Figure 1 (tube, rainbow, N blue to C red):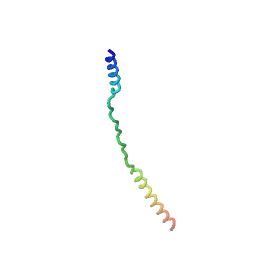
Figure 2: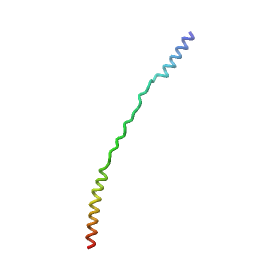
Figure 3: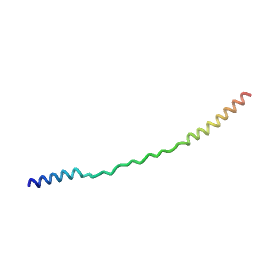
Figure 4: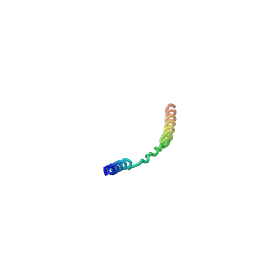
Length: 63
C-alpha cells in the first residue's frame, strides 16, 4: 500500500511539472522603416527659388 501511495504521489508531481509542455516562441515582426524624402525635396523646392530671388534682388539693387 505504501508503494502504491508513493507511486501515485510521484506520478502527480511529475505530471504537474510537465503540464505546460513546450511553449511556442514568440517572434515579433520586423519594424518597417519608410524613407521620408518628401520633406527634404519640398524644402529644396522652396529654398532654391528663394535663393534665386535673393540673387536677382542683389543684382538689381547694385545697378
